[in-house]
Amino acid sequence: MGSALSRHKDKLRGIFACILVALASKFLSLNYGAPTMLFALILGMSVNFLNESEYSIPGIDFCSTTVLRFGVVLLGSKILFGDVLALGWLTALVVVGCMFATILFGAVIAKALKLDYRFGMLSGGAVGICGIAAAMTLSSVMPKSKEMEQYTLLTVVMVATFGALAMVAYPVLVSFLGLSSQQMGIFIGGSIHDVSHVIGAGYSISDDVGYVAMIVKMLRVALLIPIAWVFMLIFAKQRAASEGRTKLSPPYFLFGFVLLAIINNIGWIPQAVGDVMNTTSQDCFVIAIAALGMKTSFKGLLDIGWRPAAMVLSESLFLGGLILTWVML
Image 1: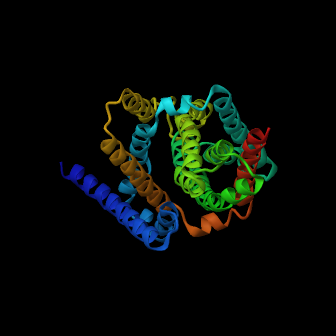
Image 2: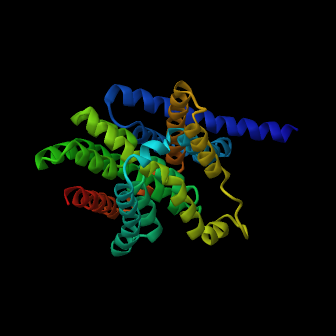
Image 3: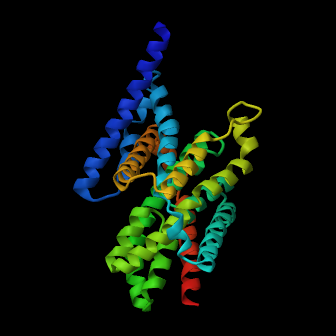
């Protein structure tokens, strides 16, 4: 009984630390305008010493796994299949094809840059699907190791940075090219990483562009779970070996995502409740990234060098080039 209480206390210490970092990150983001996820990562890494204490490790591990998965489940409340179908089958097929091509390109460019192909697939998935949320979800079904934690953190940093740059640069580009509102929306929704960056870029041009961009983006978000299943199957043996097991249990949180998406499309989730779920999902991701930051040192990231940035930039330009070519045909 006493040992059980002690374990719970240790877990609570780590959870409290992660929540505190997440709250500080949100405060800094509101006051300075930089992405919350980036602040959570940097602040988490600045208190990396907490991950060396046996009293906080259980809670940090809990936040980087269970809290993350709960956030993924709640993400299902954003999916509306009707909006996705309104795109038309050809546009949807092209967007899906570009997304898979980006993941494959990530593996190829990683090899070319002498990086781990798993890093390339993870970053390619993040670029191709929905940025930070995709990076966190896909990493949760990939093999567990210190290297994978570093790959996830680097992907988060690069996606947040290049996504913010794209949010500013892409509206200027599409205006210069003289694209129609439909073309602009498809390009922005199909090429920018995070949902927040898509909203910022699309609605900075017009409401029509923002609406089309969000529909395209929701198609990409809807494909997060099918692609996570593919990743799980590809890396099943490696992940089982990394966890010291002969076989893995099903990732039930993915079923939760699908179930919540179905419930939302039936119309059983009121708008107000859906908004709360969406906000809670984002908060879970901030807490999980704070925990992941605590598990990584600045030195460990710096030792990897310039190649990760070159890889994620290449993936971003590759995806943007494919989508732009399609809309201009």
